[in-house]
Length: 359
Image 1: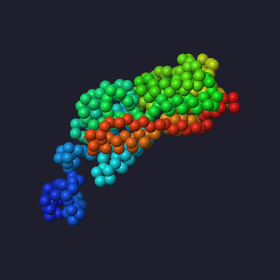
Image 2: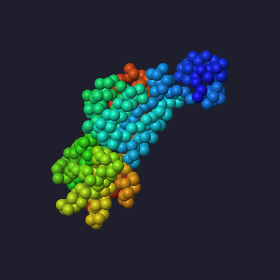
Image 3: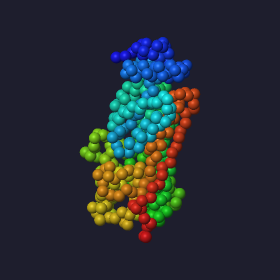
Image 4: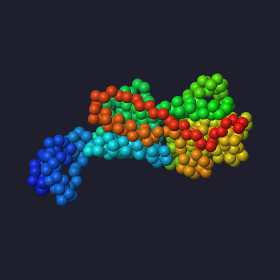
């Protein structure tokens, strides 16, 4: 295997100059650069990344820790992360390493420990599990550079990129109100997620601002059945089909009780897909009998659901990843920058699952 010394000898230059070139430092003339590039090609030289990182105190890598790498929605987030890393610096590109914890707190802690031991320059943690707060505070105490996506821990001074879930839920509920609906139910998500509480608060505020009484019997707090866990082995995920099963089961219960609402705002599109199946089995039509709107802009086909895409609040997942990783890399290069919180808006997507009341 060729070494840096071999490259220097082939190029007729010093090892110091070759090292300077390999580490991206200034002071290498164009003529020398061309000689080095030719020598590298002829010798099929592969730089020792570990040695390089020890010299530079940098790995040019970012670690991404999330709960369900396999979930359909993750693709848009990952695309944003990868493109943001690619676009930040065309000369010194960053590698992106992904770790999926499946909601296991100890596994997530193990991933972070692994990454912070010289494997990456910084970490991005995605997700809003309340149980993550302990790990986030531990990481903050270590002073290792990191950024949060979709999690807001108020007492931790760290860069954050989040969606205004409360505002998005407000507009989703308001859309139903503008169509004349008064009895609007809400099916919440997993209560271990902060975004679930934010979306619930947005729903309640929209009702209050429009002088519509908040009825506790119209708010459904689903219980996740361990028996329907899928590959993640945990029900704390938005991308988990457990949400589909919850939506189906809770809708069946709602139908059995009678006195159905005019409309339903679902904290998760996936729950709405399950609920639609239950409604179809009972002969209840969407939107003629009940209008529904969700959150996330998921594709029904990804969950083996034959229904059409529904009205929803589309998350800017690509933008979350793109802005987040560019911000982290910028702060790595400029550590003196003050921390900031970037808030993005969800987009209202109107489809055929809603219609004006009594139209």
